[in-house]
Image 1 (cartoon, one colour):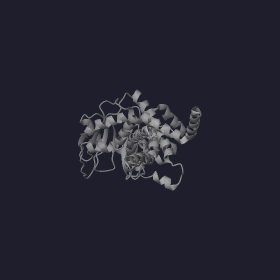
Image 2 (cartoon, rainbow, N blue to C red; image 1 turned 90 degrees about the vertical axis):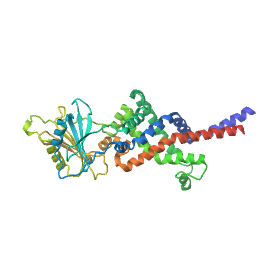
Image 3 (spheres, helix red, strand yellow; image 1 turned 135 degrees about the vertical axis):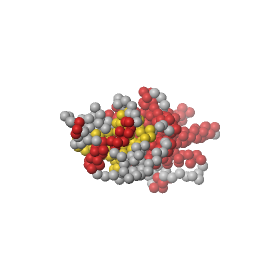
Length: 388
């Protein structure tokens, strides 16, 4: 008789195990398994949301006073060369007259990146950009976010797997957020935090409600973030949208048989760029090299919808326009592929989107904590029931 009762109880409990219960269990155990890693990745991501602003706040100030006329770019390059700074490879010219020109300089032309030198365009005063007290901290945050401070071969796939888990946690969290009966009264409860309730209820609302608000941004971060973790994923996503992601390949132009007397100056290249891209904005000029025998110029319209979209112009050494690429004229899939990084970091809409991403990452950092507390409270509740 007792065995029959057990069978009946087993049958009833098995029948009650719904799809939503299954999703809840998957959400719980995936969250517990990846909680510490996700906490560290999201915490570092919260800090990195305002990485550039933090660097600027801790870097030494370079005061610029506006005068009658700026010096030519060629003159400034000559000053850098005469001061044994190195080989100048590029310059960024801000639209703001009170900001310095930013030159990229290499001690050896074979160097990949070089270092940055700020120059006052009115006086030719030079200031080499030194690392501030914040740089080491931000570098640590970057390595923690990307590789958990481990070797890249080990840390990168671990973060990648955790990101995949986080993606499913965000999706399952949205499913679990919706009440059984879709009535406005029930939905409304999930949209607010009952601050006057007991702390267990407040903790539950912090996890459930804030998680729901942040979920769409977290899903976007996961989809884009995986491009850094797995090459196969990046290639697959590129094939899916029909555009290569992180396409850093330089174009090839047939610009030969040029006499030295016809080579334009850097100042002339800047003038052509401003006439062709006739709007106000920051200009970056990549100087010709043996490998790429042309000027590579990008310009960002200060009145554009995004501070990270730029038009690009290629000039031959004689000043002929080889190609003009307007961002707005590119196919949508190419635009999306080129914006993967700013979409992931929140730079896509400037300060506005950075604030949203900062808050979303802050919420994401809290989710493993509040979720674990919910689980522990349920365990205590079950133990109390067993005792009774």
